[in-house]
Image 1 (spheres, one colour):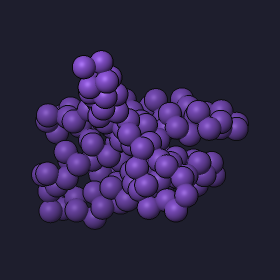
Image 2 (cartoon, one colour):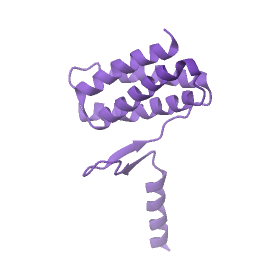
Image 3 (cartoon, rainbow, N blue to C red):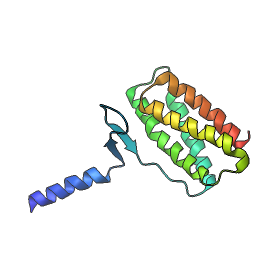
Image 4 (cartoon, rainbow, N blue to C red):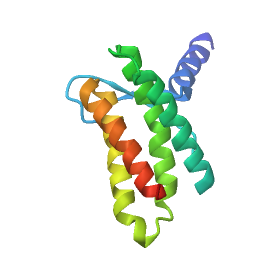
Amino acid sequence: MKILLSALLSTSLLLSGAAFADEHDHAEEAVVHYEAPKPATEAAAYTQLHATIKEIDAVIAKEKLTDTDFETVHEKSYALLSAVAKLEENVPAEKKEAFAKLKHETEEVHEEAEEHKDAKLRKHVAAFHEALKAYEGK
C-alpha cells in the first residue's frame, strides 16, 4: 500500500506542476513550459499585455541578463501569447496586418527568451512595443 501511495503521489506531483519539461523542437535540451492566465475578455487581454510587457521591460532593463532573467521573461511570455490568442478571436479586418506583426513579435519574444538570446530578445521586445502601439492605433 505504501508503494502504491508513493507512486500515486509522485505521479500527481509530476502532473500537477505549473511547468513541465518537453522537447519543443530542441535537439538536446529540455525546455520548461508554463501555464499562463487566459483572459476572459478583450479588455482583460489588453490589460494582461500591458502589465506583462511592463514586467518584461523591468527584467531586461539590466545591462547583462542572467539565465534566471531569461527564464523569467520566458515564463512571462506565455502571458503575452495567451493575451494575443484572446485578441486573435476578434481581429477587425482593417487591423489584420497590424495584428500579424503583433503576433509575430510576441512569438519572437517567447523564442528568444527561451533560447537565451540577449540582443535578439531586446530587439523583439522593442518591436513588440511598436507592434502593440500600431495595433492599438496609437
